Image (cartoon, rainbow, N blue to C red):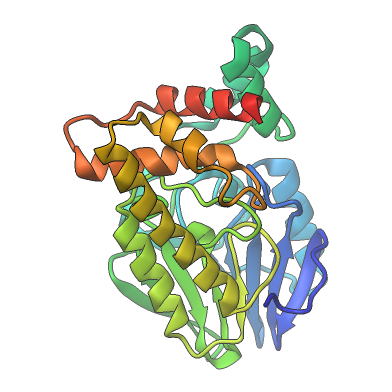
Length: 312
């Protein structure tokens, strides 16, 4: 079951000196962040998709701490790092793969797509709908100052914060942020709650292994990249989804179905989860594992998601 906490925008205290920042409804771009405070030090987990949202978050966290010493980016998607320029002289830490991937695509690309969306047909309309609420103008990418591979433990005035690299999975450089003494983990986009996850990088087996890492932790509270604060039950739910995805996609690959037709065939199973257009990306990821010589194109995947979304 989910943790008994309201799913409302803003700061939620989830432990002594540990806070989540939530952005309902958790769909495209509406990501979560976190804060660990101990003594006079603090560590921020992720920034947000644009400067306005990140400024609001930092203003809200100012009631808890008057400074941010360290920022950890859980992965390279813009909704978890495009506000990095606003954290002043804070040190930014991420996995090496995350740092290499930040800026692909750049904010300017999304800004142009949102602006030109209405003239681009169904694809443009889809992009304008999911990214239109955000302002990508004037963002200056700030990459991490320090990178690591494998694991790294940081200290926030004596409180250990473990950074655990689990990518490639959702992206090439995903990490978990585990605060053992507080029995909390911030998952980044290794966990989506209430919506379909999206396998940009894969392989799916790596993602399942990352969820197993979380399930093995001695924790009470899980802060997903998108959605409400939960417990381990939600982690197991997503694990079952990924096992189902692998199994059913393989059947349809063997039957010769295209990824989008497989998505149409499979979408009823998790109809209670949002963003089911992402199924086509997830199925394509499984197909690519089975046939590496035919990688899908980014444009094709978004076009097919737009098609599925319109059908819904």
